[in-house]
Length: 310
Image 1: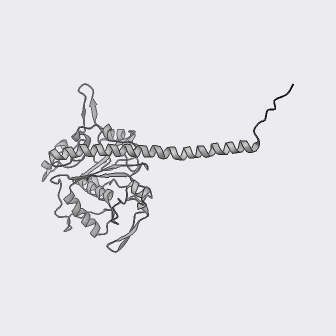
Image 2: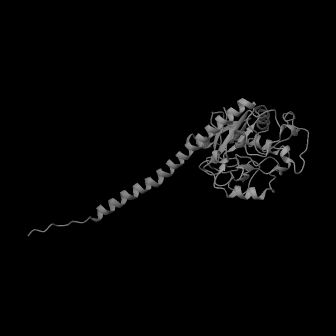
């Protein structure tokens, strides 16, 4: 009777198999996160495109994009807000309501709560009221007072604990922005940190403007952090100025659309920095050396995803 000889794996064969499995596992761990990130970016871009369509339709009817939360109403010019009646002086609803969207329709799937800079607090443009839903009428009531950095604790708590925030929407008047940009560039203030209303360049700027004809949409992006592109305002107490939201919007629009080296790529935008080497750019403005290495808050990250109205 013949015996069938059973042969096991040699040590070299086992090590080879283990090495192959390790390589495949490494590739999986490297490629899959990038694929998920790319899928999320594609989804965010789709949301931004849909929002652009809705906002453009609104503009066609109203000759203006919708105001952002906290902006002054046209009737507020020359008046002061009355305590308890701030809803007659400021716009206190989130921007999706103007285009009949829900907050969920504008979700930033890269975000974690409403803070865009990861500091566990809400700056002037980060707050966007969730409101309280009435189940019986299927309607949502929003706070009647404007967020001043210390009030509306319930809304703040809910926003910080939320899974995701809506995309940041910042509309501006392009004429006012052109004046503000000239002022900042002339003063070599490339992070737009100053504002002197007595400056000859700024005396013609008053709020609210006649309309809003430009906007940016901002996602925190794969970093989960805008790096300070979403401004916390100008001055030591930005919430105390009735025009604070408008000033923060002009600064945010400046940072979001900044292209100081004039190469057609946004200085702080995620894809420009991660794929087109924008973070490595060195250049001169007004004879002053400048660099894109750091985001406005000093971080050396890739930056947020930014959509600029056409």
